Length: 61
Image 1 (cartoon, helix red, strand yellow):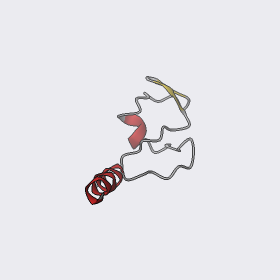
Image 2 (image 1 turned 60 degrees about the vertical axis):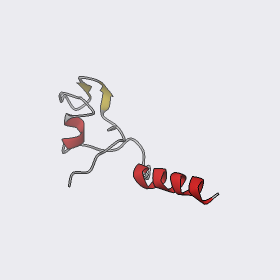
Image 3 (image 1 turned 90 degrees about the horizontal axis):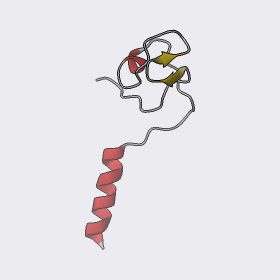
Image 4 (image 1 turned 45 degrees about the horizontal axis):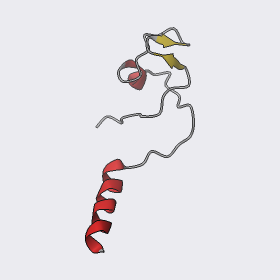
């Protein structure tokens, strides 16, 4: 299964503009680029798990 990278690449400037000279579009090409390097080391949160925990807390109280 593919990993969805929500953190933009450090070479990504704007749509259609990449410092590495590639056709930059963060939703498409940048995620599959072999030169992808995240801007910051951020732990990706599991949004589905986070939502489920929030809903469970509502039912407990």
